[in-house]
Amino acid sequence: MFFNKINILLFLSIIILSSSKGVQNDYRKINQNAYFQGEKLFYKLGYGFITAGEADINIDTKLYKINNRICHRMSILGRTVGAFSLVVPVNDYFESYIDTNAVLPIRSSKSQEENKFRYKEKMDFDHINGNVRVEAERKETKFYKISNDVLDLVSGYYYLRTINFDKYKINDTISIKAFYEDSSYTFKLIYFGKTKLKTTIGTINSRVLSPIMPYNSLFRGKYPLKLWLSDDLNKIPLKVKAELVLGSLEIEINRCSGLRNPLNVIK
Image (cartoon, rainbow, N blue to C red; front, side, top):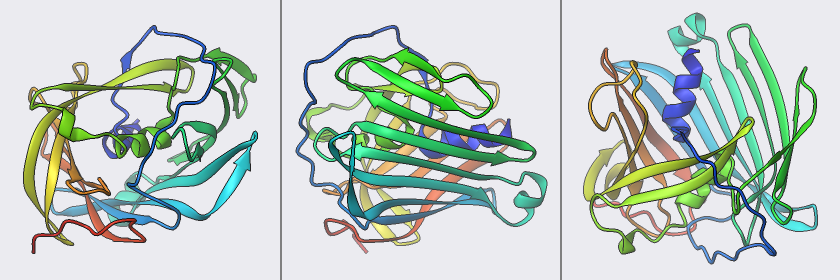
């Protein structure tokens, strides 16, 4: 369905099946200084010269205690706008309570409204025992085995911002384990180094990544998807570009507030 493609582009849900499973004795510890409470990021999705959609990515100003873990509440809202909203009306919301120390999902939920399609889902993660409880609308509640330190859609986005890219060389591969719907996956991205990116909020030093993805007739080229992150302590996503068979789709930052660190704007 059309907006599932938008989800892929906007949130990097490009997946390759992984069979690794496991159980861990304790939560990992990640010392990150890329984000904190109150951060707000706003994006526009464009197809050619047409503004097709918008997305908001936010961190709540409060901390929450979920299953005895202190968590950030983080959310992503994606929607079509203008003429696109008449042809493909979409209003999707993803929310995760993410452990502040481990950057792992403790509880997550999603609500999708795409044309006549409606779907709601809630997941509770037990990282110590290696399972996740999935409660989906009009479906039987099920438990699934998960691999160590597995991420969901929202936490995967924030975990990417904790990575030290200085240790990677150009063309190195970065792997991220994730759980989506009913399966465990490994997201793989290629690191393409540094560049300068012109955006609506200024020209910004950035780093470029490209997901490794299976063949899809929707895209063209060897690396049809590219992601630009700010080359500073924030590592915020600045832009996603998808080379399609017909034209290209771009998701670009429009404005931001509440950043933990100064943004590396050149001009």
